[in-house]
Image 1 (cartoon, protein in one colour):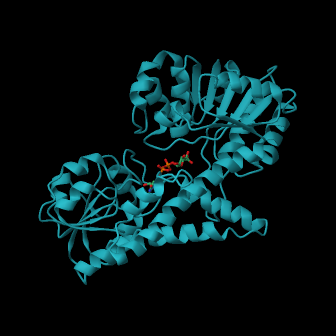
Image 2: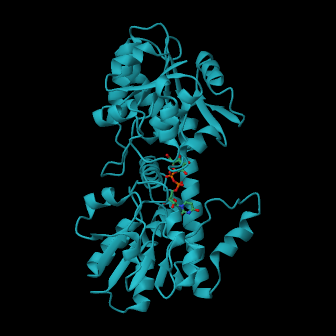
Image 3: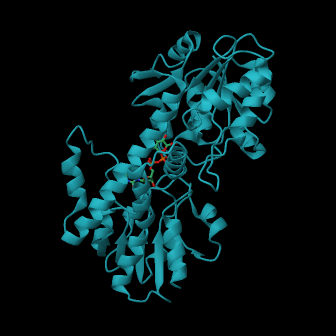
Length: 417
Ligand code: UGA
């Protein structure tokens, strides 16, 4: 099929590259010229495992451009535009609005086109916001003159290609049969369950899934904080619980809490939306509260070792919100560094991929090489990059927020174990 992808961020580019690898012809459209040039050279503009290789392999089936009029050369357009948080905890739909206007104007000149929304949008957005813009700008009727589907993504950064190629399920929210058939065909080679729903159900499945995963993590962190006081190893508790199929071990790794571009933004948006409907999401409000306090636990533990950390050399390993990504959005390293700065510690940090991004918000700290970090009064592990496993921690004071077994050779304390 001929496919256009609006927005070449990690969701759009991974989706486009994987579809190209399935022999579809793909056009990625993005406002960022540098990104477009990089994709056309076959180089991934973001760090995502396996993406550069897959992009280079499919170079002849994927092109990038800044010009949305290229949508007309395709049969299907995926909307993969960002929906960042606004200050009032709502999500910002301005990118989606512009994308829908561009697509609408092109649909006007075409017989049939399918619009598939992959961006994370609150329940009701496809029906009440996107479809009216598409209809207004095309003068056509959704479901009759063009197709619409809400097809949320469940891609973890760092494992996005693997998740795209081996999904647990594919959710397709659509309300017309022709679109349903086209999506069935597009995903026919995927062996996983396919869940067909309406638009709003598909939108809510995405939010509820992210909210539930974040709840699992905050839950095990709360249990972990308590276990630590009882001298119980939380990871053994998670293993013991995880064998129960109703619980499942994944996302029960306790540590410094969840960050990233998705969980924090999505959960806050869902809580804010529910408030407008006079529904208080009490569990989720507390899931966020537990997560806000969790990274500061590591500084509390540090202060058990040094009542004052003023002037102490503190080495930090890991700045990205998790390993295998250069993304620092809502990284738990941010509140930790803020607190260390407040307490006037001397801070040295190292991360294999995220230092350039981190420098933009904390230019005043020392960005070091990995070995130099070991010459500190204490070392905090905030991301479990594999290369941190090879260090010689013997004799060093380590406070671990991520459960790095190898660091146990040092004078070691875990955040909740
Ligand atoms: C998350 C979801 O896992 C994806 O399914 C979803 O598609 C994506 O958001 C999205 O909405 O786009 P992602 O944010 O890339 O993916 O990262 P996760 O692997 O889910 O990790 C989120 C945070 O939770 C990280 O800070 C990670 O370190 C933390 N985490 C994860 C834990 O603290 N413990 C765990 O057991 C698992």
